[in-house]
Amino acid sequence: MSSTLLFAVFIISNFIYTSSISSGSGGGGSFGTRSNHSMMADQKTQEKKWFPLESNPSLLNQYISKLGFETTSHEFTDVLSTEQWALDMVPHPVSAVVVLFPMTDKVSEKRRELHTKSLHSSDASSTESSDSSVWYIKQRISNACGTIASLHALMNVPKSIREACIRKSSWLHTFMNNCPTSLSPTDKAILLENDTTIETYHEDATNEGQTSRPNLDESIDLHFISFIHNHGKLYELDGRVEQGPICHGDTTQQNLLKDACHIVKQLMEADSSEMRFTIIALAPKVDD
Image 1 (cartoon, rainbow, N blue to C red):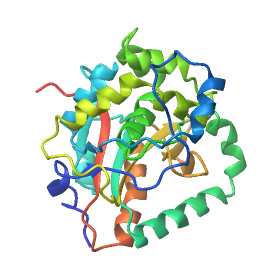
Image 2: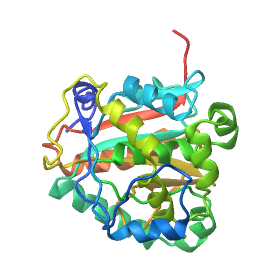
Image 3: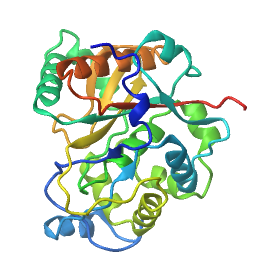
């Protein structure tokens, strides 16, 4: 099936969901007010669940702006297809790519195949140093994959963009300082789930979408992930997977969008009956 117009219809209406999360949860409390030891004690408390974010670049730009990422020079924008004509429409270089996809049996099987291939690739050992420099967080909150994917995108942008776009003293700046790359993915997740500010921002964003919020207990089969470039490698970041960052081989900042879409296209082709794919790129902003 051609992917030429596969995404356009679903850009506004799809949701960012997850149906699989790690065990454990968070309690209350504000960010930065508790030690790691006290937060670790919360792992056995009841699991949190948030309303899902809408897959809408305009809404996501408002959301990340509230978090502290200036969208005057870089913003989320639609990618209408994996075809070259659509990639050429997106301003380059792209800083990150976020993808919403259906977790059908066929798509999930293809992802497992791609992940296994990545983990057993001939240069897997050479990526270990790059892996350690990727900012990665586990997902321990149900339906939070929209926020997790956004954080994976924002926290892994090139240093020059991070310094220019993340406002000093903002929530995102504080979170970045308190959650360095070296902090374990689980400890990052515990800090996030005990942060009432991000929970409020996320809640507000779910009320600002163009579609009504679903039932909080509704079963979901859509999920959101990110792709980033780091030290010449293409990484897939999904807070639900046990492996952590998945390296899909070589790329450059300039080729990030093309190489990420090559992976996405394989997922699309695995289940040609599915139309519920969307791609959004964090890219330079073009003046109207």
